[in-house]
Image (cartoon, rainbow, N blue to C red):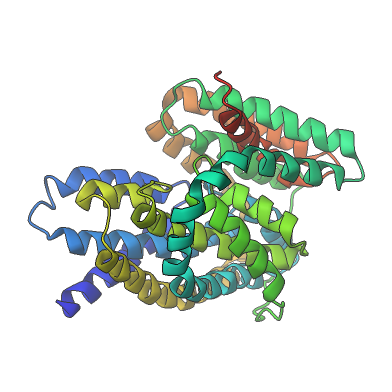
Length: 397
């Protein structure tokens, strides 16, 4: 049985690598396909192996996904904020280090997750309701701090509100996969088009290992991810904003933080399914569809899969980042950018339809404009924070 489990982990790592490298492909999409196939094509495969596969694929995808985000500027719902400091480092010849920083945060988060999963799950089962009841105030205070920390407060508020209004519109029109065109436009295609307009040339990349201290970013990631991993409406992007508010870091520290946040939010979603029977990610939803709420034995198996796939993915991500770093300046970045935009458009057309393309255009224009303003681009996370605040306030739109 152990051999079969290890085989399922390795297949999951391979699948997660493919989906992670493909711009615009999110683990939730793959999870939905797997649930459908589990009742037909995979009906003869024992559910336990599918669970191991999904867990390993989700963790690997979360590691690898930073490569297209940083090298191509193509984020998904979990890596959109990494584009900002990561792309800056790429233009400074530090693309490898940028990916390595996210991997460093990710591998540290793997071991933190293994250690605290069961104690945290027990704690959350006891305090879930009280925290849920004050989440609105936590979010409001976070937004207040982020905006008023800016020198140009009114500009920051404007960016926050305009992106929030866009997010509200997109999330309330009944579109399939609404976050795909919304976040791709705000944080991905807008960045790519700006780079094309400015005729940015990607310099030769240095292969240097990061020397950033990780304690402060990890503290912020643990506290924020614990909230976001167990509460509805909050994902990796919001956790990164909360984490950076709790523990202020520079751009390199922020990459460590977001690398850790994404792993912890994914891992805590499995713990959340076990401890309070709540779904927080597509991967957790897929597991629930296959076996229902997991027992403690199944959670241990999931954590084992997370540990093995996480260690493999850490080294695999660094290897692939080194490969991309050595090749990126030899490629015509203008043509690569155009090809990437076309690919993203096709992905959005497939999963979100023609309306999704219109949203992509609108969010791209908003993203280009906001990128030109003298405030942090993280204020565009208003596209998710404002709808989340309205959700917790009980306002129906």
